[in-house]
Length: 231
Ligand SMILES: [Zn+2]
Image (tube, rainbow, N blue to C red; front, side, top):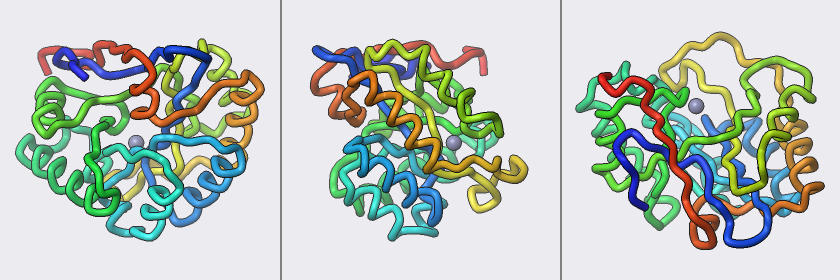
C-alpha cells in the first residue's frame, strides 16, 4: 500500500457488506489479554493487536496465544515512549529488533505499525516506512483509557459508519514495564467492554476482519497523521 509521507491508514472501505476493524493496543498482558481473547473467540470475531516489544519479551506465552487464535499482529513499538522522545537511531533500531522478535513467532512479515499515543513525526514515519511497515491509526477511539461509564465508551461506536473504520481499543495499559509512567491504570473491565463492543457491532451485522483481511477485499483510506510537519 502506497502512503504519502506522514499519512496513516484509518479505514478500509469494504467491497461489500458493512465491516468494522477492531484493534487492540499495548499488550500482551497476562490478565487482561486472555480475558479479551475469550470475548473475541466467543463472538467469532477477529482483531489486530498492536503489541509492545517490552510486553512480548515479558509474556511470550500470552503473545503466542494471540497469534494462535488467528488474530493479526501489528507493531506498536519497542516500548511505549512517544516517538519524539526516542533518539532517531534508537527508534529505528528498535523497530527492526521488535519486528524480528514478532516475526520469529508469527512466521510471516509484520506489515502494520501504530505510534504510541498516536503521536507521530515525519522522521519517525520515514523510519517506519523504511523497514517496510505501513502506519495504521484509527477513526474511532472508544477512550478505554478513561474511567467513564460503559455507555460513554460505546457511544463512540455509534459514530462509526460501518464502512471499514478502524476502532482503537486496548487489551492492556502501558506502564513502567514499557518505559512510561501515565499513572495508575483506569479501573476498566476490559473483558466486559470487549463484550459490549462486540454485541453492539454484531447487532449491526458487521464483519470484523483483521486489517490485512480487510485489505484483501477493500480499498484503503488514508489521512495525514503528522500534525506539525516541521517536527
Ligand atoms: Zn499504546
